[in-house]
Length: 255
Ligand SMILES: [Zn+2]
Image 1 (cartoon, rainbow, N blue to C red):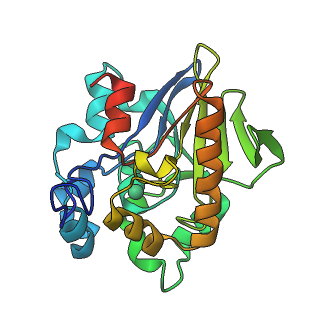
Image 2: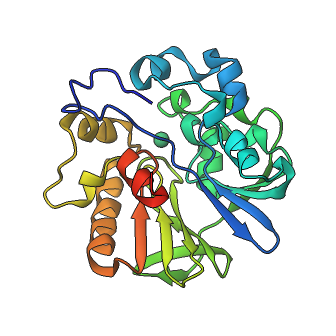
């Protein structure tokens, strides 16, 4: 994505990504977040004009999660599970590309997407789940993980970590690596790697955008503070990354 009004990266970054994570598990592949999907690219109108005008996505079929899963030699049906940090249109767009996968999400987020308030209505695109996904809504549980409470375990190696604020039921997804460390996909709980610095080095326009987009900004900032502490304290045991920061994606993919 190439946000409008970037002014050489000073107000917003010149480029944002939709960072997905493909996890190989014994029972099948698990995909964390799905970005925009092939149906969004075939019919960009369903994304709405404000999103296209402000965020300016590059609608390239080769960049979809589906195309990248196939390019790695897997089949669509090998993806048995999808976990979504939340259901905003730039995260849930690809669920229709994996129609047989179970789609895990916090129950509050599914409720927000299916029954949005007036304020929430613009951020969710019902057409992205018109195919009738196999939803697996999760209630928050009681587990602790690095100081985060109410964590829900999908299994021993995949955890849903509630990080509310950006949306009603936003969560991070923690995945245990083969070496025993953890990756935490923090979704949209922050947008720029500079958000993890104190003081923040995030471009001003992007800081404002995050405040405006949050359904509960107090909660968002509270969770961001905890992510900063986690990042400062436990690295390299936990590698935290966000959905949209291009430098974090490049660092983790060696690109
Ligand atoms: Zn997003």
